[in-house]
Image: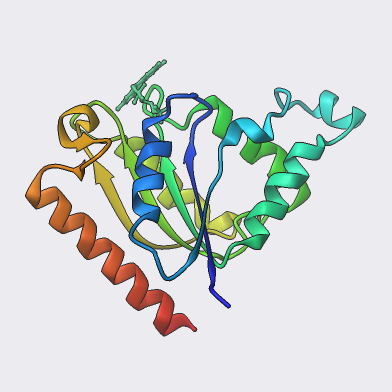
Amino acid sequence: MKKKIIGFGASISTSSINKVLAAYALTFFPEYEVELIDLNDYEVPVFSVDCEKENCPAEAKAFLAKLKEADVLVCSMAEHNRNWTVGFKNLFDWCSRLDLKLLQNKPMLLLSTSPGGYGAQNSMNIAKTIFPAFGGNIQTTFALPKFYENFQETQGILDPTLLAEFKEQIAAFKTKVTEEN
Ligand SMILES: Cc1cc2nc3c(=O)[nH]c(=O)nc-3n(C[C@H](O)[C@H](O)[C@H](O)COP(=O)(O)O)c2cc1C
């Protein structure tokens, strides 16, 4: 049976470029059963301890259950004001109340992109710093700068240097995952 890889963009934008990058990364894993998920399918109210007293939304439980299905994860971090997007942080907060190790130690390929030259690395760096405390098992990372210049939907990453670096990270990820098992 094939192992399962689940990918998502850490954004609730319906036109998320990070979801596009995650989808692109998944095409490099033909040996896996692949699923791209959309955080909009796990819509939760704004977290507060008051709201929590009323109930934990079923969608947070469903997101955790979905992550549980995966053997490995691809997560692409979007960035708003040098931080995570509110939509992702909100879902993360709800899930953390159900399971502090919400990322469940699944080997993760961590990506990020933005239209700017830093490729959302502020958001990625926060993920690198805190994901391990939440069961994050980051194996390799790749940030794509200037998404609209460097990526084309039908062709993928256009810049040869960036494409080579991306492929290196995918290859290193696969090696590490094989070594872990
Ligand atoms: C409120 C707001 C703040 C933003 N702040 C940043 C930022 O700090 N760094 C950055 O690289 N891009 C920033 N951007 C641009 C986003 O990277 C861009 O909208 C990108 O498409 C978001 O990723 P997504 O499409 O996956 O949601 C910002 C966009 C918005 C709307």
